[in-house]
Length: 289
Image (cartoon, rainbow, N blue to C red; front, side):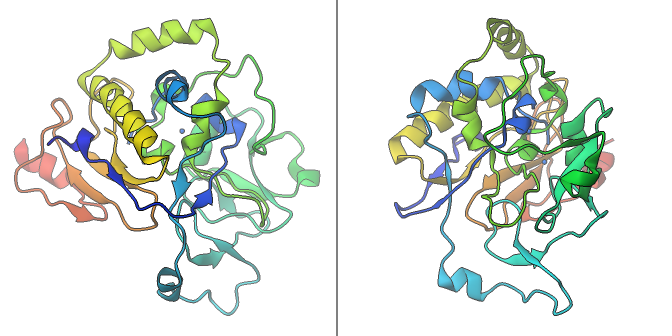
C-alpha cells in the first residue's frame, strides 16, 4: 500500500480539542497545503465544529516527560500534540511555529510590514511582546478573530508538514492550535478560490497525490468519528514536486516516521533510512548525483 493510504485510526477515547486561529487560514514542515483546499475537500464530510483531536495525555505518557528546568519562570505545554511541559518564552524572545509559547500576557508578533507573516512565524521570526508594546506589529490573532476579505493566499509557499504542526503563540490557558478547524473555518470560501483550486489540481505530481490523499483522509476521518492520530500527506514544494524529506503526521505526541524521496517522482531513495527524526536527506540526494 502507498504512503497516502497509511491512515491509522486510534481507539475511541476523549481527546484534547484543538482550535485554529483564523490568522492561520491564509496558508499552514515540507510544502504548505493551500488553505483553500481543506474546506473544499473536507468540510462537506464533517459536521460543523468537529475538529480532529489530539490523543489524550495518559499518566504513563506524562510520567515520561523530562522535568522543566528549575530556573524556568513559567512552564507551558509543548507545541503540537505533545504532553510535556517546556519553558515559556519571555519578553523580546524570538517565537514562531516551532518554538515554545510566549509567557502569560505576551503574544507572538511579526512586523506589520512583513509581506508573508505566516512564513515569518514558520521561520521563527516573531517576537514575544505584550499588546501594549506591539505598536505597528501584526499579532497572531485569537481563534474567533475575523479574517479580512483581502487576506492574501500564501499557501503555495507553505509546506504541508508545517500545516500539520502549526502553532501560534497565545497566553497560557488558551488551547493550542492544530490545523483541523480549517476544515470548517473556510465554509464561506470565495468563488475565485474555487478557480484557484482547479488550477492547483492541475499542478505537479506531489500536489496531485496530496489531493487524492486528502480525500482518503476525509473518508477515514468520517468513518472513525474524527479520531485519527497518525496519517501521511505528501510534502510538496511550491512547484508541485516532492520535498526530499517526507514524514507521517502524528497527533498522538509520538515522534513521526520520516524518510527520503526523489523530488521529481516521490520514490524512496535506495539506502536512505526511515527513522523517527531527521533522515538528513540531502546526503542521499548528493550520493545519487
